[in-house]
Structures are given as structure tokens and as C-alpha cells.
Image (cartoon, rainbow, N blue to C red; front, side, top):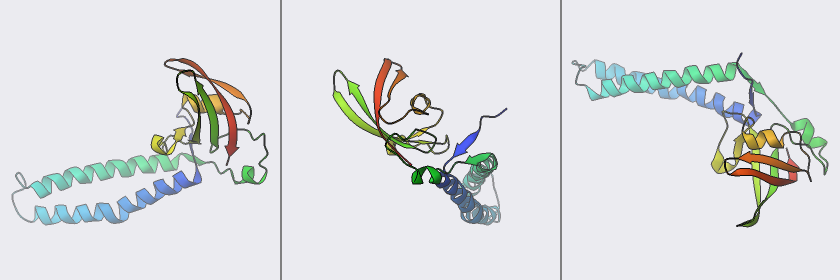
Length: 165
């Protein structure tokens, strides 16, 4: 049994956009290049043909992957949570969580992350997967709660200071 593929509406839209781009633009362009290169004759030393066929296989592989991920995607929209937001909001999938992390060496620092699907992870933007250790620790916690997170360097305690959807 495959694990559920939760995804935010924005993430679902990005995957669909990428799939449509590959199907409607990227693949037809490469097919045209491969067709042109094949018409030039000898294919064994034809760089355009060899590279085009390789690129076509990569595009087809990505199309199959995206189709599979979108087929089993479960879009979770937290629009209802936005309307009922309170000061003690609870953390669920799709939440943007701001927490205070205390480090004896570096002092306290405020960190903001968004809990998203596994296909949407982007650490530079602070998007973490709902199956990551930090997200698992934060799920169902509320503003003001202190949560212990297991890290490779040992357990760390963080305090949730804001939850937004």
C-alpha cells in the first residue's frame, strides 16, 4: 500500500502546469529536433539525434512520474481553517508555522516553515514535507505549545508562536 500523497492546491497546480508544459511544448520541440536529426542520415555519430533521444526519454520518464503523482494526489485545502483562525490555532497539513528555537550557543531564533506534500519540498523557501520529523512533531500542536524534536544531535525543544493557513 502506497503512502498518501497529500498536496496543497498550489503544489497540485504547479505539477499540472509542469506536466502540460512537458506535453505541449518541451516534448514536441524535442520530437521535431529528433525527426530533423534522423533525416540527416547516419544516426550513430549524430549528436543532435543521440542527445534528442536521450532528452526525449528523460521527458517521457518525468511525464509518467507526474501522471502517477497527480493520479494519487489528495489535494488538501485549508481555506475553511483561514476563516476560523484563532490565537490557539492547531497545526495541520498546509500550515505555516513560526516557532522559537533556543540554542545555548546561538541564542533564540525565530524560524518559519510551511508543512507541504513530499512533491513540494523546498528548503530554501522553508517548505518541509508533512512526513519530516519536524512536521510530525508539530502536527496537532497549538500556539504556545512546546514541542520536542529529535535531531541527529539530540532532542531540541521549540515553542510554537504562530500558525497561519
